[in-house]
Amino acid sequence: MLIDLHGKTAIVTGAGRGIGREIARTLAGEGVTVVALDIRPDLLETVTAEWRDKGFGGAQILGDVRQAEDCRAAVAETVAKFGRLDILVNNAGVAGGAPIETLTEAVWDDNFDSNLKATFLMCQAAIPQMKAQGSGRILNAASFAAIIPALGSAAYAASKAGVESFTRVLAGELGPWNITANCYAPGMIPTELNHYAEATPERQELLLDTLTLRRWGSPSDVANLICFLASDQAAYITGTMIDISGGKFATQIPGLAHKAKG
Ligand SMILES: NC(=O)c1ccc[n+]([C@@H]2O[C@H](COP(=O)([O-])OP(=O)(O)OC[C@H]3O[C@@H](n4cnc5c(N)ncnc54)[C@H](O)[C@@H]3O)[C@@H](O)[C@H]2O)c1
Image (cartoon, rainbow, N blue to C red; front, side, top):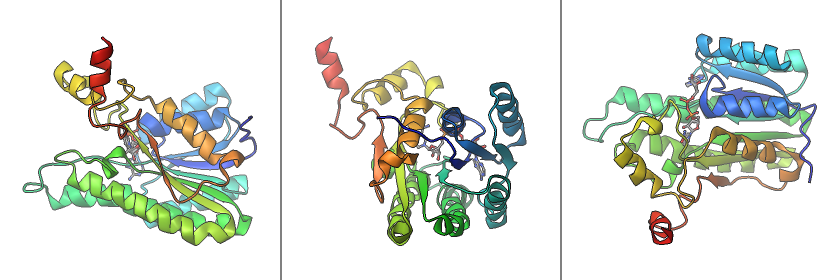
């Protein structure tokens, strides 16, 4: 089976670093014209330099996906420059938390605005173009936290659970236009979002014990899934959440199997 994404155009939000950067890089390497959007100009500059070195086309757009105007402008610029929008990856997100008793409204709002409202705003901006084309792929970053939240992650986990529910409705509403919408649940991938790699060895062991494969995921694990979900081969997958977590949900303490193996 050959996944061929040549000639498609994508917007990847939060493409300045981490998983989004790898998704954008991988799609571009597969021949997709990628518009990399991020709120941080310093990160976008490094994307621009990398794109130039690798000879990738596409564009970099500075924008805040919590702002409807920025979302509409990003889609308008993409369509004006490249004529279409085939793939929208709503990857941008933040994580922040505290025990519910002390969780501030500001942190709650930031999680919901950045993770859930931003996904809604970007989708709303992209829908008219995808409907006009009669095709499209929308891929929203949820999280394993939507299914098994950690203590202290109420705002993040609830916002990501919202992404899953939102995606189901989105898929239902867009089915008649041959637009698919799915979300994916990555975990656990050390990035600057979570700083897993800098946790104490004891904490790292504890977290790894929850993963069937007992290793951290990598941004490229997610990028490969995105390529498949964006491809023609995934045309019959919509309205679902794909688990890409090294088996975090398979059994209760999979680390025991690794210990038993020795
Ligand atoms: N890393 C993991 O293990 C993991 C697990 C589950 C889900 N996720 C999800 O995957 C996505 C990417 O995570 P990551 O670990 O790469 O994070 P990251 O913090 O490394 O990267 C997030 C990127 O999004 C950008 N961004 C944040 N707010 C923005 C806004 N309002 N507008 C535009 N850009 C914005 C940031 O500048 C940054 O470049 C997030 O949605 C996250 O919740 C990550």
